[in-house]
Image 1 (cartoon, rainbow, N blue to C red):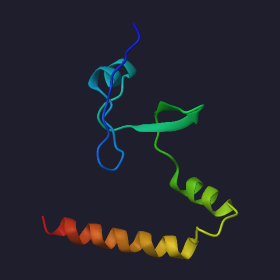
Image 2: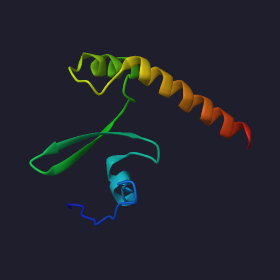
Image 3: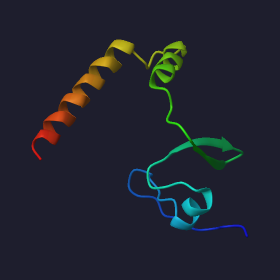
Image 4: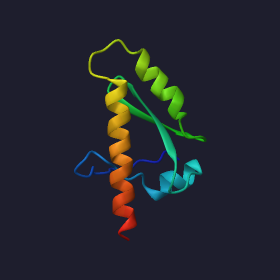
Length: 91
């Protein structure tokens, strides 16, 4: 049986994967997906392990662009963590 469903995105482009799909794939509520584009089709493949952050950062550093600055990224990451910790400490 081929599963098919229509889903509407939330304001930031987020979507919910229907429960019947998650059950069929054997994935729970907290999982990683590998997304690919193939001729205007989105392919989503469940992943057993989360991506390696260090390897991801190394890949970004190898890109030949002017939009990614490692020092800026580190500072933004630090500020984001500080903000998150500050907000979480209020609860």
